[in-house]
Image (tube, one colour):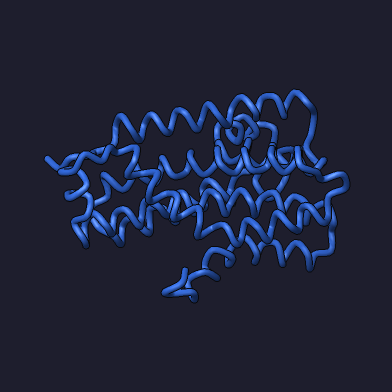
Length: 227
């Protein structure tokens, strides 16, 4: 961030572009959904792009080989680099959270803590996916294309920027199988625009379950050592 500050707008680009479109559309409800979606997308993207960064470290700099030869565990390696990704996303998350606090009636400390918890779970989930992919992707170009595609699948296509009720009834169960659906739903609940309490409960159960599942996948099935 200090050496190449021009990279920072990249984090803001997509979520704030969508927010701008919703703001111009002039619908307050749509803009509120957009805020929840922007936070979800930012946390998801930074976790996924960990995969591209780790692929570059592994292939271009042979850094993973040095880490494997050291006492550092895959868990430590993944979260050490992932923390830098989270720090890089922090300015965008801070700005969006400030807008949420300003536009949401009754937004207090408890709501802020709930939102931070959802952001952390989403970040761990997507970072686990990014780390897992980085151990199998064979070149940096493929890594960037792959994580960009997965980012679209997780952040734009499912009901992240729009309510799940917008989807046809047949597609709603499919949307429930995507973890970012639940992340966005929980952030909406903090903002007071979420649907029924039962759906909130389902999301509070689903998001940690998805996070744990992808974390175990990354730590147990990642290709840590080159054959």
